[in-house]
Length: 542
Image (cartoon, rainbow, N blue to C red; front, side, top):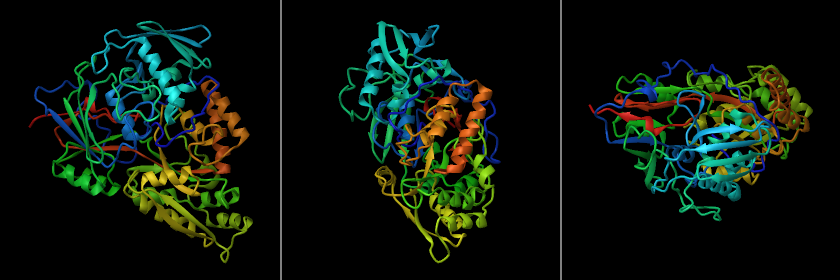
């Protein structure tokens, strides 16, 4: 998403970005074909449906449902069902369509946009939306300067309300049209009601009055969130009047809940073993989607010894066995090896880590590098490898154990596995108390720039605490967003080759998306945007 983590708030883009999304998306593994459970958003609402839909998850909202601050998957996803922006991704496609925007014009120098907004849109309390509200909301997001603010702060120089329905937006650079629309479709650009949204408070109320198909009725942290249809929403009403998101402490409890019929849908997160079993359960359906998120990777704090030595990082890259993880933990079906931070299926993806280190461990090459770095069988590199249980997959401990086995196969590395709950884990790497850890990433918007800049650009990767800085890589990242497609692909390849050689981050695998549902559930759409749209889902009465 949007990144699952916090990005550097000073992220700047000084050049135009040409967004090109590859038409062919990768669906991971041999799972049954990508269902849209009976026809997705075009399916007519049945005559008799359940009034309440229950969705189970092991995920949680980390801090808030304020679009200016939220930056975790579930918090953002709920916001995407409570509100909307000027533009949005059309379900099941990568096409960006008008939402609160009715029309727009762009100046000849591409730096000024004039946007006409809908006149029939209202906040949840019935207050009509005005251009002033949109501008005010953007100014609030930028002023509060929370983790996701860069998504519009680096886009907009200033904005003004020309009249009640017209916004004039002055861009910092002549950005490409699709790029501008993509960023204005992110949750941070959603308008909020100035009546209920404090401008000066860094940690505002848990939810705000927005414009979307649902409104928040109740939030009991650790128990459930209840959404009800927004009667003042201008658009198509949600398929189900009430949605309850019920929280489960572990994947085993979630699986039991879906098998017992206590919930209608289970989404995030079941173990690969559970998924395999449930695929063969004739009483349930498994819905799958494109496998671009999350991507998973290992991070080094390159300021910490001995990982400040590139030879050590390269040696570890030679030892990692992605196929062992994919085939053992994910059974060769629910994930695939990843040799770049740019996912398979995205513009410019290149298997640079495979080109440099191969697709199987090379123990002898790793040992030679470790010897150059001063280590031996009698003077081993002793290190901690950190992971957080549950958040990404229930099998995280098994994955860490495989990586430990990979590294110790050299006979020159000794690994101690360490884990912590998400809140503690995030604090540990933010405060730079750990040196090597596992993370995952969800896209903020659909472009390869969102997979290279936040990780490798020295002015953008502060959120990660990798401390990687390579002036040539910075230059190439800034350059690639200026270029036509063919040339951009070439430069993206150069970036991936250079960072593979430096190895501050080691890409590991990418997963697909899966939801388990009762057989009477319809309308689930899992697409490249990673937005789980509650308002399209319904369950027929049986």
